[in-house]
Length: 100
Image (cartoon, rainbow, N blue to C red):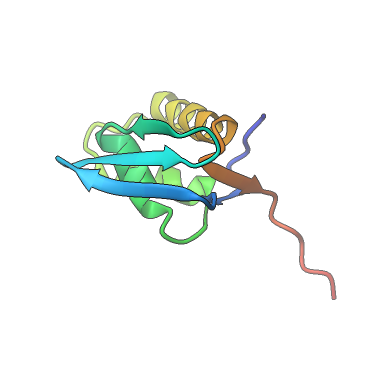
């Protein structure tokens, strides 16, 4: 899966989640697997309470975490989101152009 910054990301259905000791725990129903996120992963997951573009998610991290390095950290965030997609924790859609 190749992720682009203008794609929309949103949480997949059939997930159980809980914030525990400041870390997000998510269980996927299709394989009963527990996923535990670090601080940035937890932040990103919480940002997905509504669908967002990849670019907006990256901007949110940059605004919220000191020491954000746009080149390095943007790639890390995109890899993390790609991994969530592979694990079926999120869905990724292209933005459709408005046709008039």
